[in-house]
Image 1: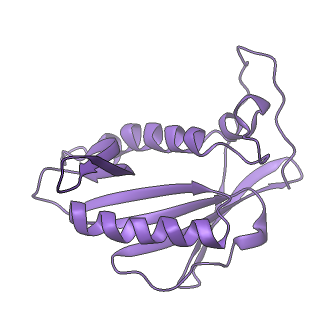
Image 2: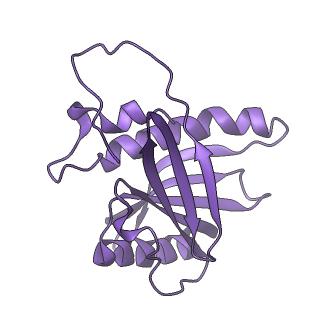
Length: 176
């Protein structure tokens, strides 16, 4: 994932956090490119902004990403949030639980933490939902992420940040 896409001033939201929509866009682009390379024999597809309708036919809330291969393989959903506070985190998890039932899938509720304040917060247990906090850090010019699971498992990932020219004048925010 290119950190520059999430932390340039053009996509920082009013609360000074990375845009949830920019995060969703990057996440979807990666999945669309990664799945056919990692699993060339499977026909998984990435569906973005999957909406369902209530009993009256009106659109309801939407799942950010649904990864599925028809009905032959397990489906996975992704509910994505940025810098979610406890209440927002809880709401995302509750919606994730609903999406799990609606789309017959396991949902990962991924919270991109620009600051490590809620990196150990996972809320109460939810059925078919795995809360994940991804803490982005800049350690002396090397970007990495800590992927934190509610089980206590932590995975460290180095984020490659290749040099590239911006088509507009922006600078990368210094996030520590």
